[in-house]
Structure formats: structure tokens, C-alpha cells
Image 1 (spheres, rainbow, N blue to C red):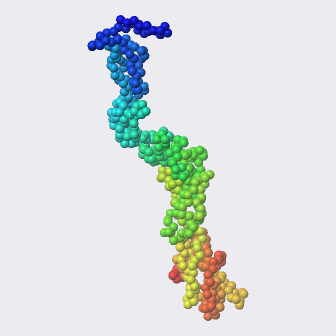
Image 2 (image 1 turned 45 degrees about the vertical axis):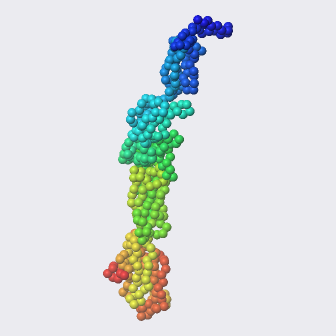
Image 3 (image 1 turned 180 degrees about the horizontal axis):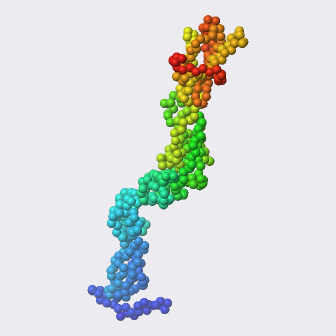
Length: 460
């Protein structure tokens, strides 16, 4: 037995110790404090020496646990168990992992171990791979580099009247979803797209803007009332449309109303198409009006009004109004004439195409006078059927000056005139020196009018 002492400023935890014989050697019946090394756990309570039977409790830092919870001081002055270490592990967040992965997933995974998982296809997209618990700077963490599960976009909780195509609860990235509404309303916006938002890689809903770029949707989609579209006001070169919403807020949404006039027949296949005519006219509807200008007279145009969030061609679900419209007629072009036939006295012209309107017929204004007789003047108006392209009077007066004009006729009126000017000799034939002259002019009708049918005039 040995009695211990210490300076007065210290107090002995054990005043007496006994020397014992243990397996061929003498030992003091005391345990020293456990040796703390890197990553070794801490222990409680902390003392310089421990009596036989004393117990210490081990603790590890976050992400580690001791290989045994306690150690006991033996009568031989050693700890049992003597070797204690901190084992790292990764905790599986049960709720999050169960939503993301399929298959068996343990509650915990030891450091260095790995488990194979697959993405839950209903809500995530990605490939199968390995999850591994690794040591990063002294901390156990999940290594998910071998598996990438990206969350899909959840179906938006918007206006319950909206119908989604395809109809799903989750949508893949870059999958366009078309919206529709019951009759009498239209969706705003008509198309949405699920995209990834960086850097968090979260799925968000976007819609196209007027530059055809996709931007995040700031307010909920909805079904809005269709505007009231008045019958178009049509002229030979323009189509004007008026839209009205009552109340005005009923037509407001995330979309913009556009209108388009498109030529029904391609200009290369249309012989009547004039250079400079409008093939397609697209514009935003501002203040409830829209006008297509510089159009071809008496031509068909497909007029479409649509709600769009982009500048491209709208989808069918966004079309609010579609109608095939024909611009009004205008006066016909100037007929192309041929020189007067001196042998027969016939006046011939080429048939006009129905470019500016249906040709209803031709009108000839005949004026006769004599230079040597101021009292002589005859005027005559002759109208012929649209199939007639030749006029042969019963006779031309001899020694007379004639001015004859021919004009096409549509529902819009008489067109530009082509003119013959000649003089007959005393025998009734045309003087050789009098050449045909053609110039454009507009002639008025004379009270004296005579109708000529194809039977009385010979066509070319």
C-alpha cells in the first residue's frame, strides 16, 4: 500500500494505491486516461486516472459514431475494450430519397459503402447509378455524381377551367404543354414550357415572349373571354377589323392579340398579282383595331386573329377568328387594242382578265366630226358583252374624222380607255397616212347607247 500526497494547491483523486501481481509482473491498480488521437472520440468524464470498474462514455463528431459506446477500467489497469474508433456514416433522408429513388434504400450507409438506385420516373427524369458515402474533408457526405435525378415540373395549380395536353401531374424539361379552354374562352398563355432554372436546377414554367424567347411566367394562367369581332370593313386595297371586350378586363391575360392577312394564292401562280402587292401582313392589334393595307384588289385573303405570347405562327388553340375574305372590285385595267383593219373597218382589242373584278362588258364611245363642216358632230355609245373583242359598224361615213375609245366595265365602274383616231376618205376607207393612236383617257357616256351582242360583233 502506498499513500500519495500532493502540494497544498492540489487535491488527490485517489490518496492510496496498491501494487498487485498480474501475470508475472507488478502493476498499480489504476487506468490512465484514454489516448485521444485524430478522429478518436471524446470521452466523459475526463480524469488523469480511473479506478478499476470506472466507465467512460465515448462521443464522436457529427457524421461519426464510436465503435463501442463505453469502455471500462479493468483491475489490471487497462481499458476494455482497448481499441475504440469513430466510424463514419451517411444518413439517408428517408422522405426525400423515397420520393426521388426506387428500390430498397437502407436507413444508413457506412463510409465507403454504396447502393444502386433509380430515379422515380413519375416525378424525376435521369439515369440509374450509385450512391456512395464518401469522406470529404473529414466529413461523411453523399457522392451523387454517378446518378442525376432532375425533378420534373409539377402541373400548375391555375384556373380550374384550363385543360392541359398532355394531361399529366408532372412534365419533363423542354416539354411544350398546350392549354385549352371550354367554348367561349381562350387560354392565356396558350403554350407553356418546363425549363431548368440555374444554378439550383429547379423546374419552372415559362412562356414565349414577342421575340420568341422563353421567359418565366409571372402570373397564373387563366381562361379569358373571347373578344367580340365586328364584320370586316373591306375596300379594294384594305381590310379593317374591330375588336371589343366588355368589360375590357375580360380580354386581358398573359397573351397579346395579333392579326394576320395572308394571300390565298401564291403570287407566282396568280397572273393578276401586281408587283408590290402585300402577300402577308402581320401586326399587333392596338386599341381594338387592325388594318391590312396595300392589298390586291378582287383577291382572296385568309384573315386570322390569334392570341400569342410569341412572334411565331400561332397554334390552333390560340386562333380566335379565321375567315376567307375577298377585297372589293375596282375599275379594270386599260384594254390593249390593235390597229384598225382598213379592209374591213373592224376595231379589235384583247380581252381583259378579271384581275380587278368580273368584266361585265366593254363600252365604246364613238365621236365623228368633219374639219370642213363645224355643224357636223355625231356621238354614239356602244356597250358590248364581255366575250366581244371586236366592233364592226355597218359603215363608216366617208370623209369623216373619228375618235373611238374602248373601256372595260366592272361593278366598280369604267376603267381606263384606249383610243383609236382615224379619218376616212371620201370613198369611206381610212386614209393611209392616218396611223392608229392609242392613249389613256377617261370618257363619259353619251345619252345615245346601243347594245351589241356577240352575234353582231366578231370575237378574235
